[in-house]
Length: 623
Ligand code: ADP
Image (cartoon, rainbow, N blue to C red; front, side, top):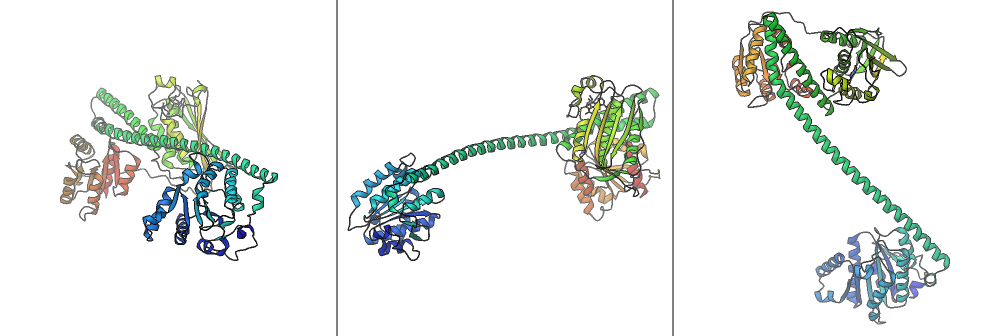
């Protein structure tokens, strides 16, 4: 008693719990606050406290969680204590003592403690009380009242009481106040007198002290409310994020399925188209009756439309699925525009005039050449398609030197677009009411323009007046340079027509119709005799045996993937030098790149274009 009330009876150094409880300082009991951090150290301290009591014949009361109580019991048994010894410990469940299934109440907890303690009080026999207080969510005022009542009751009695608090769940404002109402303060490792303990203050709380506690509590309530609001908001946010994540996953799955479906569909449509177009090309070249020629041209034209449609859909799905790679380079603007316009001229069977305004020779635009061609071609074909009879198209550019930006305009004198539809035409599959009824189309062309332009970090737009034409534009980074043209035009593949009589061609293809067609096409080009095999395995063995000059390889074979055959051919000493041209209905850019990377010298997509096939055959008969 003396030692707790007078801070002058100092502990000169830090003590551990057994050192303190063995010292003469606490002969008349002690009220200890223990803020624990580590449960293993906590349990070991509790065990020390209990075993020391058992040795000294003290009465022991343990108020603890069931989990810790079981652990303490287990360790005591391991240390050699008997069931009988354990029975001498009075155990009370922490929940019953401190919460009574409600929030912590000072009066309830104190009364039940009194019931326990009072009968044990004996001046000749010490009572050891170890209680883990359930302070989580407790009000400071209630906790303080409970601890003050305990402190007052135990003062001078022969009781050593450890009030343990889990530091993790006990806010520091409660920890601070608890230091004022316990004579000793203990952590996992050490114990000392609390420098804040003053018994006089506890007994009579001054109005200012009351007000101070009230303020702390009010502030704490305010923060708790704020915290619970933030937690609710966070939970709501997390829920939204989860919903969005799920939706995104679904959309990605659906997109992937759509891409697979489209590429499969495109492949399947290309196969019969190969036959239609192949024979149409042969018939056109073979020369027949004039009317028949016209009809064949119509078949070829219609199948070409179908092919374009398939290509557009496939392209769009590839862009949407992010499977398009962009390789930007400085492109000589004048040459690029001239080439794009002259390529369009070949397809422009109408009476539309296309004029290109003067473009400075020193301008370069930064874009992916292939994709920019696609963008400008789409704008030019639309400008032809939606023009008036005898209409005009003008292509001109704006160069903003300061912002280093080049804008390419494609302006037509066509049907124009109404204000209400202007913002919709770049959406996938959107077609205006007028165009739907008069022109063929898919509504994908401008969506491709928009997506590719964005991918190349450019911008796009349109101004239009219904009945009076439209002005579409795309804009990219660009600059003027007096350096000689950085990028030369790809030389066009022009070949002489040497003799091909000795060329041995092996075609590995499982479809007899395609083999027959290839044979007829080669026959039109030259007198080559074609050898064919219908499986990858047979084709591979035939190649070793016959040593052809050229191998045409279908990539979809019944027994194995064409790329495996390619790999076998390219690793066998007798065949690795033989050029291989893939012939496939698989037209995805990624599939083409893969085949070329793995060693194909060329890739022809089905339907096979007769001119392209001729170029390939001529090339290899030259070499
Ligand atoms: P499609 O031409 O296959 O319909 P696009 O995506 O290229 O698909 O065009 C979408 C729609 O935008 C067209 O259906 C048409 O209504 C309108 N459009 C596009 N270009 C022009 C143009 N130059 N003049 C008038 N309308 C146009």
